[in-house]
Image (tube, rainbow, N blue to C red):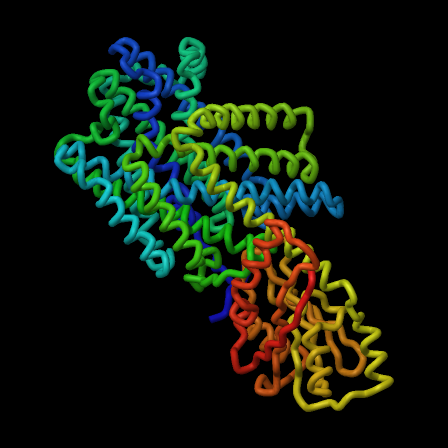
Length: 629
């Protein structure tokens, strides 16, 4: 099956794209009402009386409302989503754009690379916490139906999570058709449940006043850190709007947020607030208490589906981030499988799936309830959001040339909001917040070791390298024996003689009639059209250099490239083609550092070039050698 490029995607009508965005993009932020308001009010009114509860509800609702308006609507929907890389979003797409502007400055490129990898590392931390807290919070709704379910909450959550990760290998294409309609029903239910309570207690609408939230923080300075640390739960998932932009486009995501998701969330939060004003005892679970008795079981089942969809979305995002990192050279080669012929962004990475599954199960067993896990939630999300803000500010100001007098102050305010939320969550570090930091730190160390080691490996390949022009002059002066057929050498650079060719000539004393030096080049754009896929440069003595271009969202497929070259120029029989792949063993020239040692260890265990490039085994010749770094 060939990998589709951007131009292969059929144009869908706006309604279908909006419905699809509801099912994939908004699952995380759309399930925040399950726990965000409850935990925020608890953080601000522990042990308080009914009068203080009312003040807390108004203050918290004001903070949640304006956090959604500023952080999600203004920052992401209106501003950051304009920083797209040919329609693609996410931290690596943004990193690639900024790297183009930085140019050849080593310090600048290294700083941007560190920022991008840190954002990705924080996202991986979030990918572990989101499924755990979402599924736990949904299953905890059983306690509303009957307290006797409480001992079984953890085991039911583990069963659901296990089923979720087992289903990943089938791909979101198999169940994606259900996601949009289910989430549409979910958001409709959120809005209706909230609207009923608002009608009973319309004075709750006074919480739309932003000054109520600011005054509430001033009146509760001692609790402000805990309050903000809980309020941030309402905006988690906002980064997904930008990360998944390439799947649906900017306009459908905007429409889905402004017309469906944002109104539904506000109605539900205000409905919960109205309920708490009338019945403070409902704080044990205000979301499920919104529903009448007959509707609680259907709502619970719907919440199960919604949280599974929310988890699916963030796990799929982790797969996409891993795939982009591999193609940008930030991670070693991994087995990446496309699960849909129509949607190129739907991929499955088995090793990432296993790591996430183990991490999520460990979180559920360690924390055992959503309230405890909430302490670990927030640092990774807000950290990733802050990095998005910094990179996007550089992009829109330095590259798009937006008005600095207007947008420098605006981005300063947005960054201050991010840093305020981040600081508030840092106080939860020893209560569980250390966990996403540890995951992000380990991921960052791993990626930095790979980037630095790969750079040193590329530098080592240049030492003592034989230029192709010199080699052609040598064999023209002293012609070796030529044998029929075509030899293709997979190379990192196409104007240097590959070691595999030299080894073959040294030991076999032969050279093929036609020799092709093929280099795969990943561009800083998501997709490459087939018309610009390959560039061929002809040399003397039937030598050729071929550059094969891929976007960072695409998967290399060498057999498809061979078929393309056969039609365009070479007219070869694929039975006469041999593909030579170097199999290097890396050794150090002296004592190695921890990062270098980690790179060598991972390099030896990584996916081979034959599997990565999807080369048929019958055409491959692997030649080894040592290289010192």
